[in-house]
Image (cartoon, rainbow, N blue to C red):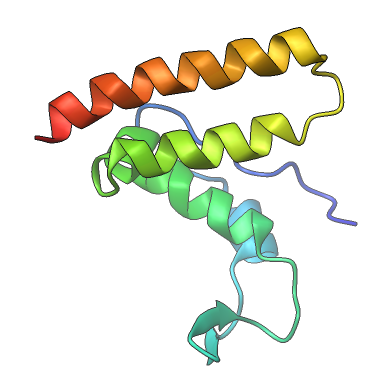
Length: 106
């Protein structure tokens, strides 16, 4: 278990602490079957550090909004706290956002 808190990505670019850099940056990135990896190490802290440094708005701007919405929906629907009514609201809301995103992307 990590001793330091994970970096927390924000809308604006913010620095990470040097201790977080030491804790979460792999000494050497490796490419295994086309994926970044480091010997089975949990890469969550590293991913969060990169997003924290680049800012969420920048990350979002590099990927179509519809892909972000699909990922958000998939993760949110896995949450056991959502009852059927909330799941339905989420799906309808994402569908509406997708319609807007498609207009923006065209």
